[in-house]
Length: 105
Image (cartoon, rainbow, N blue to C red):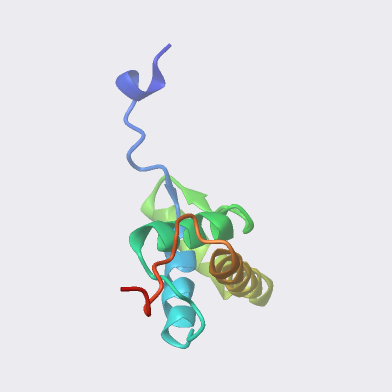
């Protein structure tokens, strides 16, 4: 049974994505040691962090209320902060591509 063609799954959302992206943006504002901020590196950071935090899936607007309550929990917010910080460090140490040297001509 092909679910994607038989059912509308567009309302299935992982709200953790929004929280991770917001935290990634917040932490990158102060990040001075990161050599690359290209789309590939940013996606790598987000994916690494999202694979670490508890997912917060919802299928309705009412589910959005649940995720907002979950985000207010200090332990979840802290886990997102730690996951993003770790992801930034991992990508900084090992980017998925060659970083061009500024002094190369």
